[in-house]
Image 1 (tube, one colour):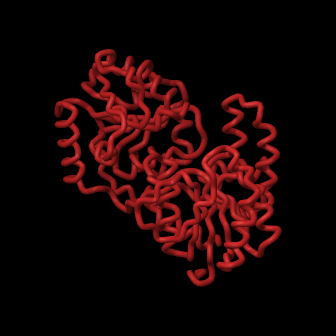
Image 2 (cartoon, rainbow, N blue to C red):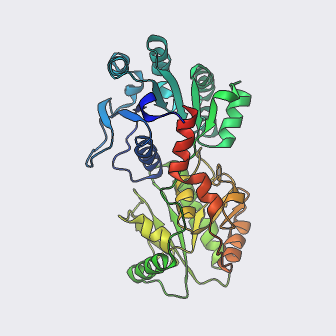
Image 3 (cartoon, helix red, strand yellow):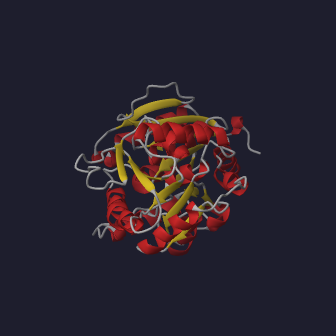
Length: 373
C-alpha cells in the first residue's frame, strides 16, 4: 500500500464546513480528518469557517466568502506556491466549480489533479429548470476529463459520468459519504436516548417516534417538509398508529405551530441531533429534489434506526446493504410511503448490519482513497 511518506495531499475546499453541523459540512469534516491519518494533508479553506477546534492538518484561509470566489485568479498563485514549497503530490478540488483552477495547477505543477464531486452538477441545475445547465454540462465534462482521478459520491453518478461525459473508467472511483461507527449502538444506549427524548417532548411509550430533519434554508428540504405535513401526516392520521413526528433542523420557520398539526413536534435546531436519531423508531426521508447521497439517511441507518425513503432520497444507498432497515418507495407515492411506515413499525430487526458498515465506515472508505492515490 502507498505509505504516508509517498503522498502529500492538498485539499481545496471553497465552502464552509466548520463547525460541522449539517450533512455536507460533516462529509468534508470527516473525510479530511480521516484522510489526515493516512497521508500528509494540508487544506485551503474559506474565510467563512470558524475554526474553534484543533485540526490534525494545516489550513490556509485563502478563499473568499462571496460567489466571486469561484473567479478569484489570485488563488492560482497562492496555491501553486504551496504545491511547490511543500512538495504536494496530489491536490483535490471539491466540486467542479473551481475546475479552471485545477486545470491550471495541473499544467503548471507536477501534482496530480483530483476532482471530488458530490453530484452531477449539470443534472442538479437541470432539475431546477436553470438555463445555466447546458453550459455547466460542457464545463463539467471538460473538467472531469482533465482530472487525473475523479471521486464520485455514488456508483450511480460514476456510471452516469463515464457514459455521458466519456470518462476513462480506470480513473473513476466511488468514495461515498461515511459514518464513524463500525457497529450498531448498544441497545441500552438507544433505550436511554428514547427515554430522554420522550420525556423532553412529552411523547408517551405507546407512540411511534418518527423523525424528519434537515437544513430548511435548502429548497428540497422545504419541499420535503411540505410532503411530511400535507401528504404523510394526513394519511397517517387515518391509520391505527399512535405516533409523533419530530421535525428538527436549522432555519425552521416559526410559522409552523403544533396546534395546526397535533401529531407533529416542531423542534427546530437541536444541539444533539444524534440523540434524537438514536431515539427514533423510523426516520422519514421524503426528498424528491437535490442531488447526491442523502447524508442524514446514512447517519440514521448507522445508528440502527429504520427508515422509509423515496427512490430519489435513497440515491446511493443500496437497499441490499441495509439489512432490512430501509424501505424505498417510488417518488410521490405517499400512500405507499405511509404503508411502508406501518409495515416497518411492526418489524423487529436484529441483524448486525455488517454489510452496511463495510460499505459506509469512514476508515474503510479512506483505505479506498489511499489505494486509488
